Length: 177
Ligand code: IMP
Image (cartoon, rainbow, N blue to C red):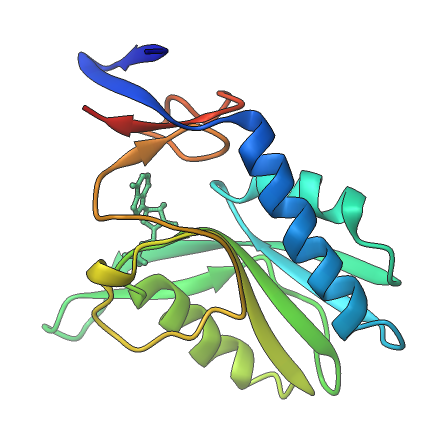
C-alpha cells in the first residue's frame, strides 16, 4: 500500500488523486446546474481549502468571484474559551449568493462560527461545499450542501490538509494507520 510518514506518523493511501478529481467534478456539475442563471461569490477558508478551491473553480462555469478568509482564534475576555474571528473578508456580500469552501467539517464548530459571521453581512443565500465531512464527529448541526466524501473519524492529510503544517502538498489523501 502507498504510504507516507509525517512527523513520525504513518499514513496509508485513502483517496486517490483520480477519485478526488472525480468527486470535485461531480459537485462542480451540481453547482453549474443550481446557479446556471446566477452570479456567485466563493469564500474559501485558508489554509486547508486552497487545493480544493483551485480545482473546483476550474470546473465551475457560472460567473463567479473568489475571496479567501482565515480564522484567527484568540482568548477573549470571556472565561468561556476561544473566540474565532474572520480575517480578510472585506467584500460587501449584501444580496449575493455565497458558497463557503472548506477542506473538512469535523466538529462543525469552525463552520458554525463562519456562518454566524457571514450571516451578519446579509447575503441572499449561503451554501457550504466541503471536500470532506466527518458526520460522526459533529457537535453542532451543520448541513453541508455539497460534499465530496463523507469519511469516518480518522485523521487524514494531503490535498490541502495538514499535520502540524506538513502534508498539504500531497495530491492524494492519506489516513492515519
Ligand atoms: P471543526 O471546527 O472541528 O469542524 O474543524 C475544522 C478544522 O479542523 C478543519 O478546517 C481542519 O483544519 C481541522 N481538521 C479536522 N479534522 C482534520 C483531519 O482529519 N486532518 C486535518 N485537519 C483536520
